[in-house]
Every structure is written in structure tokens, then in C-alpha cells.
Image 1 (cartoon, rainbow, N blue to C red):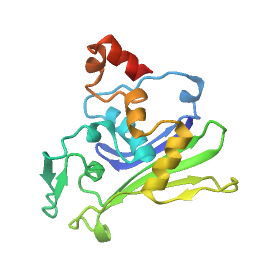
Image 2: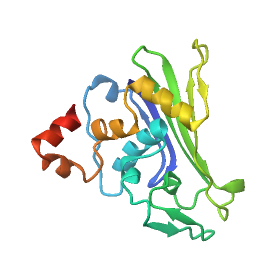
Image 3: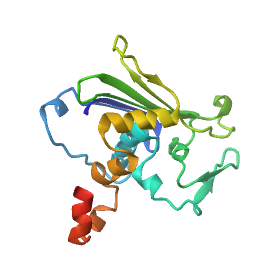
Length: 193
């Protein structure tokens, strides 16, 4: 898979960002580092990549399903710690992530993740996120998927990794690096394999 462009709108601390992997300086580098102050959105960029591809993030997947969450100050709805919709930037009515990429055969795809408040009203509940996966116009066979199970199956086929495998091997979640370093050799070998 070759990343082309990541567009972020109203996700966590990021109001708007566009990362063009085909533009200088990223297009000329095989390896790059994301740096910045605490709270600047470094982890959010990785979260957005995962949201577009899999509809979740490593830190949300590791959240306890029974505990945690917060009350939405706008309407008193309870948002659980593991729900991706909690990434909607405070004070906004919609958020989205769009990732353009080529598969290993050079076929261009666009994956999107979108969440919004009902009736685009700040006082309404946050609806369940929506996802799409499409090939660019003119690509044969054309792909235009909207069902989560179909998108997940197609992404797994394209990348060769399901969500958990991707999270373990491609994205090392914040705070998990020390855990990896302190793992025994067998656990490290299994992870890297």
C-alpha cells in the first residue's frame, strides 16, 4: 500500500489538516518522524489513518468496554471511551477523515470515515460513524462499498492485515513501545512475525 493523501476535519485537537505524501518533503523520504508539542495532534494523525482504514484506533480498542466515558455537555448523552465518535472535535457538528492510497497493484482507493451530530445540530446526539471505500473513477472493476463488514473484508484483502494485525505490526500505540521493549523474546518474535 502506498499512502497518497490524508485529510482530517474536526478530529480531536485537529481542526483541519492535509498531509500530502506525494508532495515534498514526504515524497522524497522513505522514513519520516512526526514531532510536536504535547496535544499538537501527533497521535491523532495515526488515529486518523486507522479510522479511515479500519474505523477504530489502537487506543480506542484498548479502552475498557465496561468503564470510562464522559457526558456530552451539549445533550447529556454518554459517550464511551472505546467509541470512535468521541473523536469529534468539541464544539463541532461533524468530523471526517479521508485517506487516498494505492494498493500493491497501483489501484487507487479512497477510504473515508465520517461522524456527525443529528440534524447537524450541536445539541443533538452524535450518530454512529459512517465509512466508505471506493476506487477512483474509471477503475475497473469499480469498488464502492458502504457496509462496514464489506469494507473491513476488502481492506483486509488489500493490505493483507486485519485490524488487530495492522495495529500490532504497523502502528505501535502510544505507551505500548515500552511494553514491546520489555516483552520476552518469544512475544517480540510473535509480534514481529
